[in-house]
Image (cartoon, rainbow, N blue to C red; front, side, top):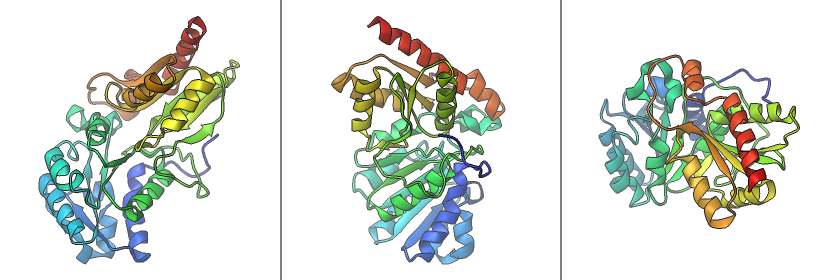
Length: 318
């Protein structure tokens, strides 16, 4: 699996243009914004449908409340801000106002992870997926590229119930073309393989493919799964990977103790125990350029290569 010839694009770029398309298709969409519509790209929807766009200023708790009210009135309510603010600043409102009543609110949060770079530690959401996965009934998605982000947003709009979609600031290579079809709750096999499995989401998916290409030069046949949906989790794909390849490495731009690694580990230990390693964060980072931070904190293809080789060695000892 290689990247397409399309230019790199940030997953956050998917929001505004996709919502405009869906409204033009007739979906009863409204958007609530917390003063960051330019950065999240939600403002593109405002420019086309100003009577369906509501801004509450820097008041994320109010944004969730307004979106919940609009959803209760029958609208498909989208809300967007940075991921440090949603769910970080309004978790209680999401829990009580959206998750418990299972309202049709679609939360799209941009600028996730440490790849926001120079914005610094206070702006780096590395706990958001764990917070949202803790809420029963909330669908949680971390797209790998802008094409998958567009399709995830459309699936969210057309599927009843609450969604959280994590997008990013950095421009990423496009893995998929328009022939791809995102399926909620289904992992996508980017590369088959029998010696080990890399399970990744978000920004680390492309790095996982790069790592598998490098490993193949050493005769290591590595399966790569894009686990874009964290809730509902594709447990079948995880169990199959464990049984068929005998070891797993997870890769995520999130805390490994509470994110993808933790969730995959639960499935593996309960169904098909095999050696596992993880590439991800174990603590907070700092301010710096995105690529420098990813390298310093071990979120690169070479880090995945190292962990795959280490876990294969453990497999041989078991």
